[in-house]
Length: 278
Image (cartoon, rainbow, N blue to C red; front, side):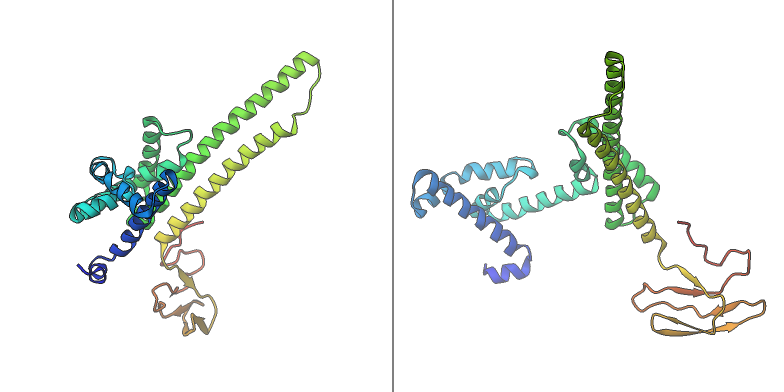
């Protein structure tokens, strides 16, 4: 099939073909440099190993499939190559949606089943509370789980380093009969751990505010004393009513993000649209 027609039918065809072609060129250049072969000889050597790569592409876990593996599969069976690519994308979606992808950046010193289960438990707890409605909210929940996990890791380091520093001070006082100030390097290590705990706590809170604001949507604006109010280049006439209250028409921006104008509540009473605190 013509390459241009195939690209229109499948928008991924072009980018995938470029990646596989680049992998093939890299392998050919590797053979040329390693064995002193010409370009045709190196290309022939690469193709000799394609049956092995085809088997590897079909049998190995999706994260282990390389572009050169897909290239070998494409040359021998384009339909199988496309099917395998779809399987890889499906596996990537499942990894994202189940939280296993989000866990990897915060798995310190490698992954264990216990570390992975603890992260997923925390993520599940946050998701149960917020019930994310779309991909954006799921990503924010993942960031919160990552920030909380990292904060716990640094808090553990801070506790350990602080306890060690205290034990060393006690030992110096006992052995030398006097207190000695901590060395700058040890003090800096403790301070760094404390700063990292605070940093990830702030990331957690900032993400929590973003998720909360995403849920809140447009907020009401109460007008106390004004005859006319300009809202996003629109003039809104505010009518004076009995009791000193001003009432305005309700309007919204064309892009759906404008602010609502609501009647000002009487003194000491809640407005018709209660605002969330914080």
